[in-house]
Image 1 (cartoon, one colour):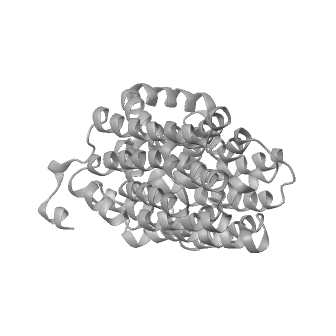
Image 2 (cartoon, rainbow, N blue to C red):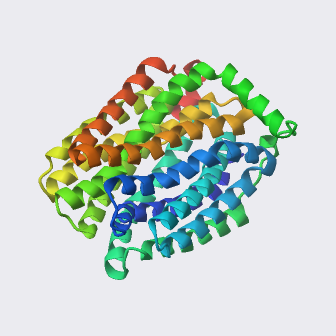
Length: 401
């Protein structure tokens, strides 16, 4: 598959990342507008991740049945409808339900485009392909929070959800018109539910060790990534007293530093090895997270989040690349479904941890807990996971590419 054929994934990714970025400074405050506790705010923020959890393995199975293109289209369509529904939610129950369904749609999109990129790129260029994908995500995250904050300030907290639904329709149209399917991703029938269950059990046995070690590292890694999106808006608003527009700028400027690192991250992964990118990524984020409780205003909060953004940028595409490197070709959909399930467990768990610890002890202790999670991610990935870049297969031309 030619690199130009990645555009049907890259462009919708940019659009959907913009929509997700809009909600970063808005969703925690939108949830709080229902007059609920931090714990329930955490549940609202985690509900999309819980939808991902429920949808990941079925999405991996459906990928083999429907193919890459139809999996992407259905996923984006579900996401668009769910975002529109969130804009008219009248209770916390509705908000959690619609966000959960959005997570199921996102699971289908995530796994199908992950397989799309994996099939489109050879091992020695996979780091750069995934880091570009991560960079595009970060570009959307850079622009989105400021727009979301401004839109919420001008038109209310529900407005960003309507715009997210609208841009999702644009992403759906682009994928429908330009994406190509790949028959190689389709699998023969595994004999119904029982056959799929037996195949998944066999996959877990044959890849159990690597899923336990690399999976644990990814779970912790995604926890700190999701935890920062919960802690930064809440700490800035409830502790420092900053308004939604100021919070939007803090998140946006951090995202600018984050997105500027995507090419160096890909180069490091393909030139030196995957570990040289993802170990510093999570160690630096842990330090930045530990600095947040010492912030006293806009500028000190900004400095801490800029450090977090720098660290996260070093990890652009790293977990995607690691999962793609480890995935067996004959069971790619199922493996990536399990891989996403593990990572999404971390994403959905982080808001619950933050909300629970914050309710019991306060936001500052919750921040230190998430910082510790980031440090643990760096240690597990650095010490227990083998390097997946097969440097002995690289040619001089590939090194220079």
